[in-house]
Amino acid sequence: MSNDDKPAARPRIPRNPDNDYTDEAAAQRREFVQQQTGAGLAHVGRYSFEPSALPGNIENFTGVAQVPIGIAGPLRINGEHAQGDFYVPLATTEGTLVASYNRGMRLLTECGGVKTTVVEDHMQRAPVFVLEDALQARQFGQWVDEHFAGIKAAAEATTRVGKLQHIGQYAVGPLRYLRFNYSTGDAAGQNMCGKATLAACEWIEHHYPTPLRYILSGNIDTDKKHSQINTLLTRGKRVVAEAVLRKDILKRIMGVDSRDLLWARQISTAGAFMAGSSNNGAHAANGLTAMFIATGQDVANVAESHAAITYVQLLDNGDYYWSITLTSLIVASYGGGTGLPTQKECLEMLGCYGQGKAARFAEICAGVVLAGETSLASAVLHGDWVTSHDKLGRNRP
Image (cartoon, rainbow, N blue to C red; front, side, top):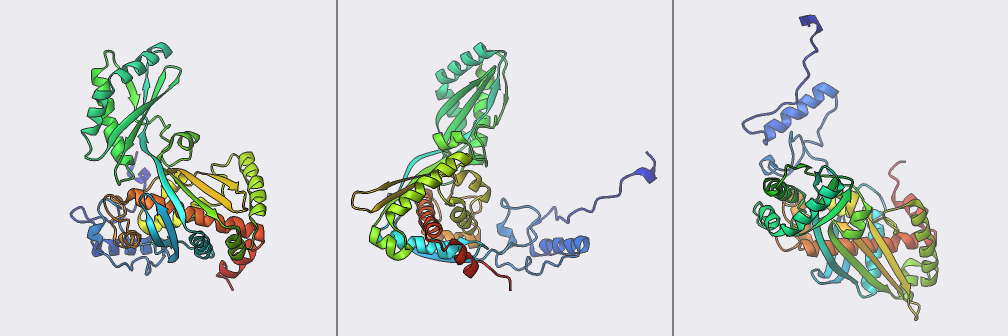
């Protein structure tokens, strides 16, 4: 290739190999963006914390994305871990969202609050081992069961808080998928589980009597993707929020009758079934996303966390029992983005920052989701869904 045929040098984003987390380094990158694109980043460049706090959270730090935060509440929660009245930070750009959740919280609180329960807690990594045929794959699976203690010790040697609880096994031809299930303390735990499972696979490879091939993720852990296996077996925390809505309060606040609400629920559940939806409720992703952004959660986990099952009963006295089960809620109160200044403040608002608070935060998330379900479902039935968006959700002249 002649010099004339060489590709043009690609403009490189400025980096400082000695210390890339400074105001000066961020300013250099904003200037670079303006030179390359013509876009000014005046608002992106305004932030209130030291860039030195960011290693481990972001690369090529250039500025911030400012998302408005609104407060909804109080929401009364009667849980095992979360108890009391909570004011909830919701970061969103969708008009009506905060108002709608606020209305649902009012309903639940006036009806005595929402009861919340964490019923399961597992985080997964799922390697796949490739054998010669199905018989060898089955025999390998039996060997794994027999050597669980050694596998567990190898995995747990990599982490202070992660504990290997059990290994699920799934057979396809000569393949043996192993779904490692861990408890992860107050961290979401995906990276923790990946490191622990790699150590476990290396132990298996070293101790198994014949050579093995494996891939660290066979994709049935379904990281940041919804799946039916997570709906059935749990990923993250399985949390239930439930409440009894008094028919008189429901009518006064939402303008709907409990019998009409049941009628509409039967129809919407059939629609969700026909569509193959991961959620037969209304919009769990709305509240969860707004909470995740405000509190420093990994927002991509909404892909799994929004999966939910709504179950209701019309009681003999006309009151309405309403529950929602979040099957794959992935949240943390420690690590990741939770310690950044803005996000830490929002977690502290809920009493959920630091170790020992993840289950409390999960229960609050579930209560918020139930509040949003009651408000949106009632708005659709009452006929003020569109008009409320016209009133609060339009920012154009």
